Image (cartoon, rainbow, N blue to C red; front, side, top):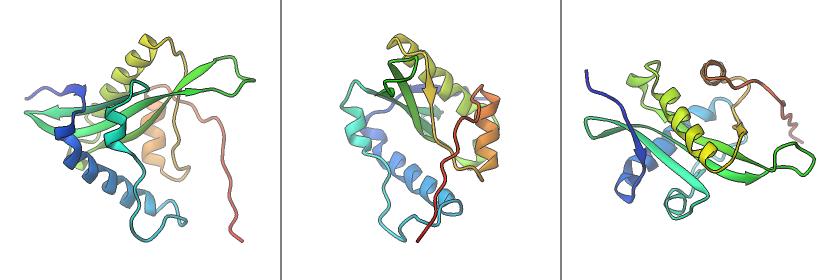
Length: 153
């Protein structure tokens, strides 16, 4: 069996990363009725490649990209114990590779990068009703922390 390789994303990866972004949007539509009907783009992927504040990684097998994720350095609220944290996002694994530990490998690599930046706190957002994602994040040590609530008018 081929081995998963986790590496920094490059400009050559942008076409597949843009496909991943739209796949994420489509999955999240079922959890978020406030998403626009068309033209949704969450990330400035090209910009992420150009800043030292973001580590954008891909997972690949046999030179085929099968997953992605990023860590972005952010200033924490002044009342928290930690000055900075790394915010994780763009976590995606192609459907036929889910459940094989790829997401865990990406998160582990992002955690190593965050530690190298002297950051000791990882944060991410996940839709409350996306139980598959919640379970996947809990499996690698994340715990539920806050619940954001909304009400349409």
